[in-house]
Image (cartoon, rainbow, N blue to C red; front, top):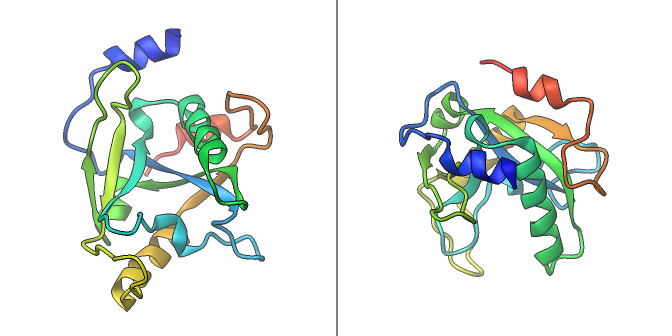
Length: 170
């Protein structure tokens, strides 16, 4: 509850700084190849939409991101959507391929650190993705830093990589 209050009152700028850490929640085996590489599908939004929801890590916590991932896993109708961890990029890296915009979700139960990656492509159900869209998604996946949280039973980020993630700089 204290974490929720702190995040609720934290001042968050509308403009995303190039050095901000942007976190995409990833799932296994859904978002991974057999060799452990992240698939481009991790950076593809829902059909009929031009956005992929992500979090501005500088204005939220790894614990919040993990709880969000566990909730998405629980609500999923996809069998192979198991919370794995995060894929992290800096805003500058995203901007080389797509747009990143602040998109806070208002209210006490909202997510004020919410942002969206926009590729400019909106696919309809059954439509084949154009090569440029696949290229953008694949490049974002290749450039991502992948961090796994080993203890998926906990609601808090418990992995030894916690400080590495928090202290990561561009």
